[in-house]
Length: 334
Image (cartoon, rainbow, N blue to C red; front, side):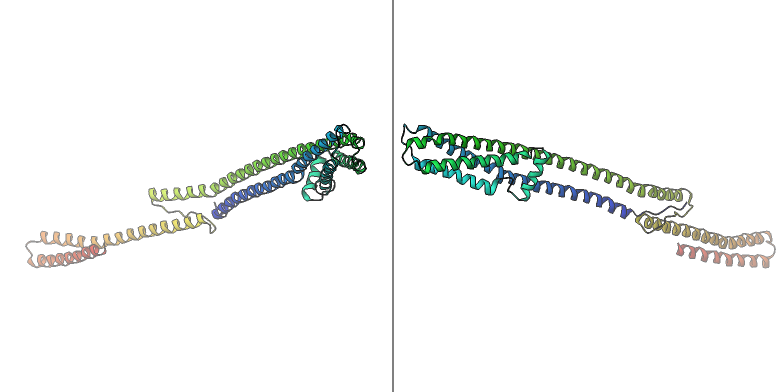
């Protein structure tokens, strides 16, 4: 039965290709995950942790401002120091508005962070953040107005206390928003890490299954055909009969089968030539031997006739000489 030739090389190339593709995809996923994680951590550092650090300093300035306002009018107020504290909080507010406010941030990281907020159903935190920023700005505006006219008046400085308390409240509210941002971003990072882990598992398993399937495919292309070649060689060894193995195509197994066929055919042809040669040699050796035996018998049967015996012995010597030459030629040919 004629079978369809399958290229072993192509199957092996496909197997290697699947393994290389699997490794390439896994490396790509790993690099993409690393880049995304690095981006998330950079966003956390630049826009979240830095805000919390600035908020800590601003809350401390507001606390000092509140304590100074509570101490007046019993203690002469240091209005210049209170103005500096107010100014430091104002600098933090301006930086927050210009660099850190989520609503005003147009970077790709901020866009992804907005998506994380929406996924967590916490989009209202952006509005809450802006409300806290506006409360801080209003409290600072009232404190600035009062400190501008305070001079050395302890009672005016003391009136700043309520506004300083409101300022601290607004800053703590803003801090709570930042803590919520940190938790949401941390949950998003964990979710993306889990997704990457699952994708790497899926790709690895698919690559392994593909490699196993192609490995079996390669075995199916090699094992039965090799087995047929082994059986053919074994049959030739036991019976001396050569039957051509029908392997189509130009793949590696077909080339091997054709080479074995050619070798076995050559051996079979040589065997036939050897048998023919031996048959010819046997015939050539049989003819003089028969003549020698015949003439020898004739000479022995007619001892009284010298002429007949001499003629018979001459023929025996002639055929013996021919037989000797044939034997010499056979030995030289061997």
